[in-house]
Image 1 (cartoon, rainbow, N blue to C red):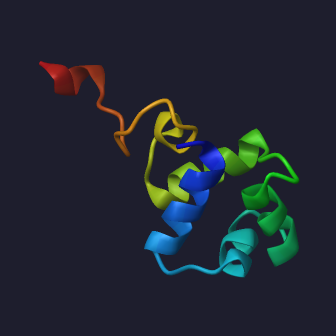
Image 2: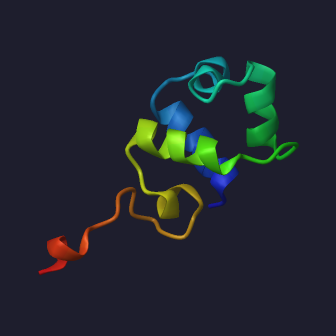
Image 3: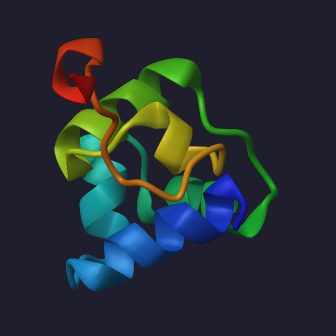
Length: 77
């Protein structure tokens, strides 16, 4: 799953509109739609904001992991 699909899935799982998520990252509904649709790129600052909002790791958001949150090294013992 690529990050655009993950963005949409996270938004839909929480019953949010594109306009609502757009407000979180200070974009219009159309601006956010362009990100989900692949006509615009997600800025790193917005990625960080959305990871914090959704309580997921950036690895999960960009598709490097299928685990929504990362485990700290201390958690592995």
